[in-house]
Image (cartoon, rainbow, N blue to C red; front, top):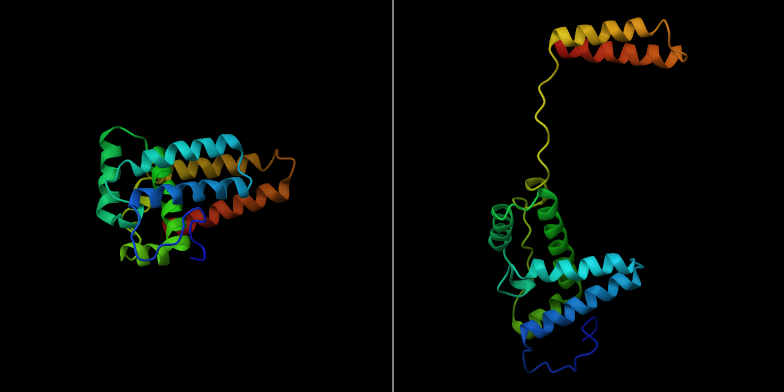
Length: 180
């Protein structure tokens, strides 16, 4: 088949072992890193991460569903993995799944009778596993007044008066709009 794994002989009448097929997809995916000019250390990091990601699933990548991704993220969270690690797992899963879907969806449908969906939905996207932003309260009115007084006093000593005056005017406008 065009776009298929070149090292397999076509046998449309018999479904191939899913794990052998996936292993071929992994090799083809890794070959794209070489062709795209990734450094050997990057390729090594990717080739060690992908099996760790796929080990969370008891099915080939094209059969993974959103609930399976959620379970993987939950497992990583309970194991104390950082948000950055969870993000890398999702990024790798997304990249490999997209590669398989774009390159092999028709072959997978022909061999296994399965459509390749997308296990990454809006509920398990990166925004749910990013590092928690610091929860900062807006400055108090007193703090804003003190800041603007400092900025106004600084105008007398700055070397670039037009830029400092512009900044001061912008800060005043923003804080006035905030209070209003």
